[in-house]
Amino acid sequence: MNIFDYFTIWHRILRGKPIGFSIDVTTQCNLSCRTCYMKWYPTEHELSVKEWEKLLSSFPPNNRYYGAWTGGEPMLRAKDIEKLIHLFKWNWIATNGTIELPQWQNVSFLISIDGNEKIHNQQRGHWADVVQNIRKDSFIIYDITQLNCQEEILRETVGFWQKRCRGIIFGFYTPSFHDTSGLLLNSEERRTAVAVIKNLKKIYGYFIVNSIKQLELCCTTPWGKNCPAGNSIVGLDAQGKFKTPCVMGSEVNCSLCGCAVPQFMYLVKNFDIQAIFSSLRILSKGL
Image 1 (cartoon, rainbow, N blue to C red):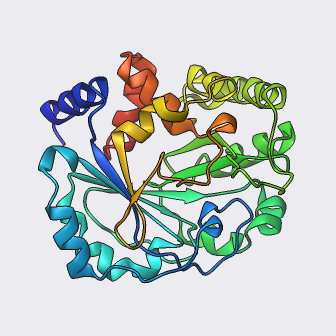
Image 2 (tube, rainbow, N blue to C red; image 1 turned 90 degrees about the horizontal axis):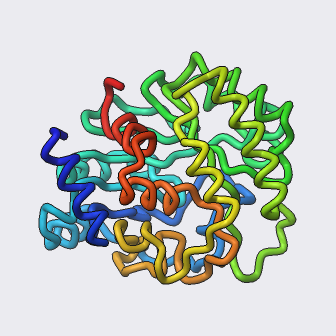
């Protein structure tokens, strides 16, 4: 992407216009993670490559600056994704990291990590596979829960991955309306975790991709219908149907949202310099 593309994206966010898609390319997965929101929904028919090509091509280019490929485990359909990424100027692939990552142009891989080795294997498993497969141009996504919010776990995790990838992106576990997982942090517990990350950011700098302001907003801001992520990112399920109110679908409890994406969009919309710099990092290979 070039400077004109970045400016256009910011301008569309400012106006509440779509800039990209989050695509549940599959509902299938090779793991069974406690924090996965795909479990909230039934498994149905998945669109073929030709069906996805036809559907996505029907939207104007200004709606297709980036595509976020999710699931399930999207890398189970890696060959299909490879045929579709040309539809977007940039692609994010949210993966569990257990499948080898290909060398694709205009793609950032975002790998879910749940804590240090012990906690990750309790919640998700296959730590050794992720360590083997991760590349230095990848990012870590870390959803903070009751199981991995402790200071020593946060410190150990950031320290371990610091020389193995480009950065770590924090968010907080967001529940469904019927959540009984026991993983949710309340506002005060979130603030305690943010204080730890703030100190870690003094040590690791921009390796921690979030701004502290973004994480502080995660402690206090329920979005609902006014969610800037819901307005800017079009969610599509595996059948190509629109997802509302956001990419997490109709079962998400917006009043307890801890997702970092809406806060990030809000800050970009308000021309927050740190948020804009973060966006440039995950939309490029060089920063």
